[in-house]
Length: 253
Image 1: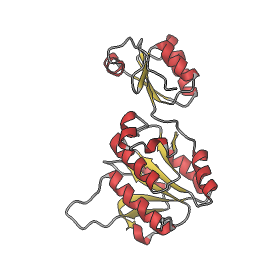
Image 2: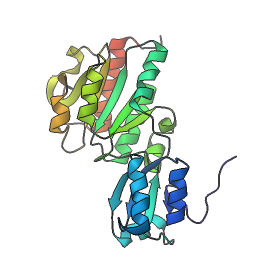
Image 3: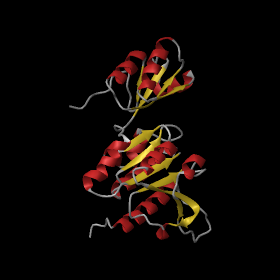
Image 4: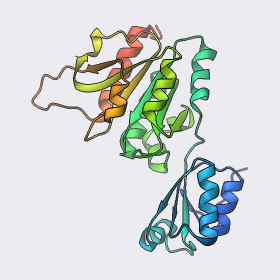
């Protein structure tokens, strides 16, 4: 039976001290919590959230008023996720179950929810095992992401990690090679994307961060024949994913 929203909930926001506390106790998927203070009862709620790995941001009343749409937020609002987050282990279990080499998509600083939604949609269609995001400096599973993904956010596992570069180091030990997208890289068609791979897509304006770039085993690019020198992040991601699909022999002939 579908749960109806009460006065302290909207499509992607839970507000009020008791409502947020109960959401945490119920392990509802929460992207982040916005609070007016880190002291008193608000501080206790925020400490509980941090223990659960949820981001907490201190903000002003205008932000909270907007999130609660004029409701009595009591100094705290929780932005809910459109789907449950997975763990990296969950994502690796997908390829293990299929009996194929891991095929991962890593988004380094993709802050536009429309870009993230488009990436999730293509990743699901291309048969990727899952998408890994950093907890900070990244769009999360909001309703906008869900709508842009055309529902793919419900189907493809998405994990959030504290440090993307550190996670890459751990995954390398499991035999995964990382290929970062950059306009100055080797043509993607010349790279070997047929094995256990992670495609790394950088932010819309600045590309990959230095720590993440340093962990890439190779930098790959797409040929540019026009007057513009770059592609939208989600478009580039989609082309690179299907180059990997081609090399991995995952076509459904």
